[in-house]
View 1 (tube, one colour):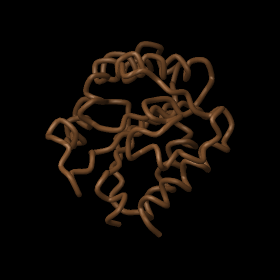
View 2 (tube, rainbow, N blue to C red):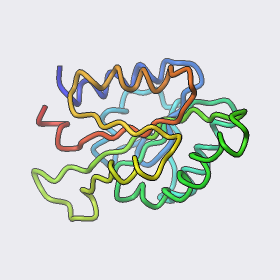
View 3 (cartoon, helix red, strand yellow):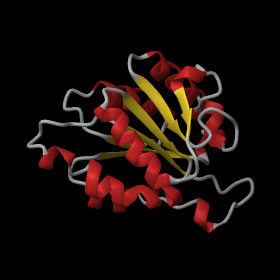
View 4 (cartoon, rainbow, N blue to C red):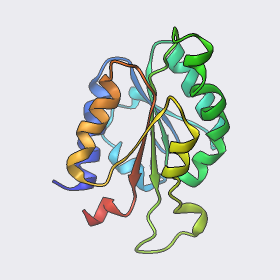
Length: 178
């Protein structure tokens, strides 16, 4: 079992589940290494977003409030930082603000970008998992280290009964290494 193959298989499984929608940059067409895991996902389950990370998170929250289970895809953690205010001040606080009456189930899919075979620049390879864990009280943060953890983690995030939002961190270097 390879890291990339498990991601691809898992994304195709998620696309078969009711009310799921992939939202983000290069979810409907090529442009980043993550697209290859989505290339066989039905196009009616993808919604390409402009490069506006904050808007994407706000849109994702809205989809969830409308009854969808969005998988919001950010190819690199460095750029997810642009949506962090929306995650910290909105998504993470909605349960407290609503007295746990509104629990937006969202999967945020992000990667620590690959730095080989060619290093793309320091603004593309950050891993802020520990920082995210410290900022959130309701959103759960999970890092995917091994291929065998991929499907169970995404399945857990999709089927969790507590309806928490889940930030799942992949590692771009593992796409070819593991």
